[in-house]
Amino acid sequence: MRSLALDVLVALGVAGELLCCLGLVVFRNVFDRLHYAMAATTLPPIFVAAAVVVAEGRSSSSANAIAAAAFLFLLNPVAAIAVARAARAAE
Picture 1: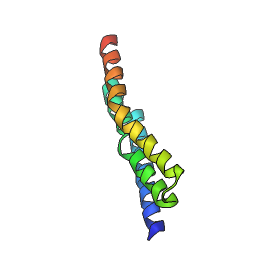
Picture 2 (picture 1 turned 90 degrees about the vertical axis):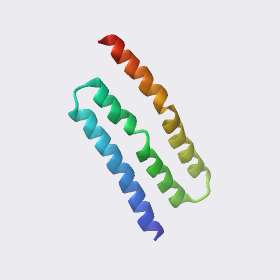
Picture 3 (picture 1 turned 60 degrees about the horizontal axis):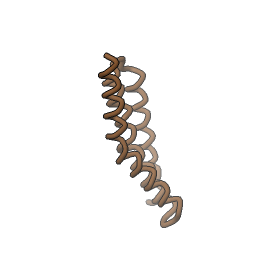
Picture 4 (picture 1 turned 90 degrees about the horizontal axis):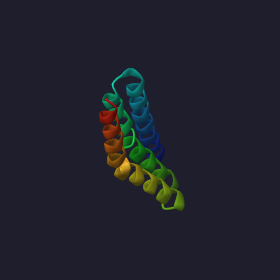
C-alpha cells in the first residue's frame, strides 16, 4: 500500500509539472505563460514533498521537502506580482 501511495504521489507531481511545462511552450502571451509558471509551484511540489514523507517517514529529508514546498507555495504570489508588473511596464 505504501509503494502504491508513493507511486501515485510521484506520478501526480510529475504529471503536474509536465502539464505546466507544456503550457509554457504552447502559449505565447506573457500573462498566460505566467499562469502556468506559477501553477508549477503550487500542487506538484506538494505532491513530491508528500511522496518524500511517505518514502522517508520522519526524517530531515522529509523536513527539507516540506520546507521547500512551503517556500515555493508562499513566495509564489510575490514572484507572480513582480513578473506581471514588469510585463505590464514593458507593454
